[in-house]
Length: 113
Image (cartoon, rainbow, N blue to C red):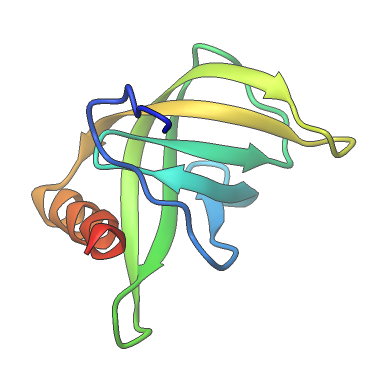
């Protein structure tokens, strides 16, 4: 049995969820997993370790409607992925509106139910 050491439960999306750098207005990768406190990104764009970013992505509800999420993040680490030109990147959320945090919490909890 695998013991999950993270404080917040995470959910891995079943479909590809693109992530956009809000400031550069460009796609930087896709969501690997997310919790209410952070996220894993499969990055297809170069990222600077220990930098701050404003990111956005959308999460589907149970009816399939997309809900935008905007977060201010701190890039904690980056490591090479198996595919050329891609990297795994771990982010900690610094700023998330109460509404978006609740939406994140609900989306993650839906996978636990």
